[in-house]
Image 1 (tube, rainbow over the protein chains, first blue to last red):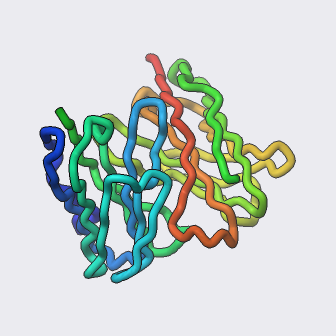
Image 2 (cartoon, rainbow over the protein chains, first blue to last red; image 1 turned 120 degrees about the horizontal axis):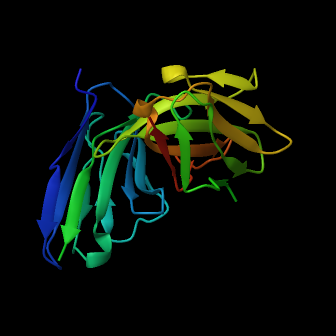
Length: 112
Length: 116
C-alpha cells in the first residue's frame, strides 16, 4: 500500500516555464488537496477536490490549475512559473471531510 | 473567520519531562481539531483528532490533547518526552457545517526539540 505518491521529489524551473506536479493515491479516497509550505507560514491550501470531476479553489489558487479525471490522480499545474512559487508542495487525501489526511512526502520546487 | 494560533515557534524540553505544545483556535461553530507531526523532509503525519465527546483525546506515540471549549484551546501533551519526538507539530481546525469542503486551517507550526 503506497499511500500518497508525489512526483517529482525535486524540481528546478526557470521563470515562465510550465510543469505538472503529480499526485496519486491508492486508498480510494474521495478528498484530495494540494498545499504549499513556506517557512513560518504553515500549510496553505491551493486547490482541493471532493471527487472525480469536482474541484475548487483554496486559499492561494492563483497561478495553479488542477483537474480530477480519476479518483486516484490529482495533478497540479503551474502555468507560468514565478519565483514566488518556490516552495514545498504537499498533496493529501482523506476518506471523508473530517477524516485524517494522508500526506505525500512533498515536491521541493525552486523557480529561478 | 476560522483560524488557528500556535503561540510558540519553538518548545524545548528535556527527555523524560512532560511536554506541552499549545494551540488556540477561532471558529464560529463547533470545531473539528487535529494535530499533525512533520519529520524532516517528510509529509505530515496524523497524530490525533477531536470531533466530539470526551475532551481528552489520546493519539499515536503516547500523545494526547485536551479540548477546552471555554478557552478555545487544544493543547498537545505527552507525559514523558523522547528525543525521537523532536519534530515540527501542526494544529489544524475545521468548522462543523462549513461549506468549504476539504478545507483545513493550519497553524504555523511549533518546532519541538527534546534534548537528552
